[in-house]
Image (cartoon, rainbow, N blue to C red; front, side, top):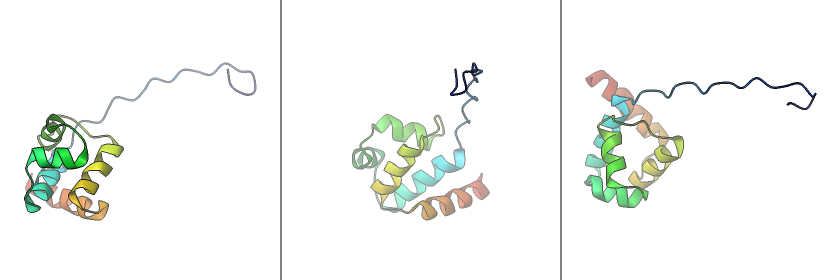
Length: 92
């Protein structure tokens, strides 16, 4: 029920977006440019190696908080990530 006393319709959650291969490639390129392994990036970002691997291979789409953890761990900016994603799109 909402504040006016009317019943609220339940809304179904939209389906999740599919993973973006360009984002995965961009994460990999930024990681490699910094001379990091997946394990090292995972440790710096406080996530598992499997998470980094799944993101880079576009097997899962990251939450916003995960993206922020990654760019912080990479010492990158959101703008640098976005530019790298755009370059990656042109390669795919």
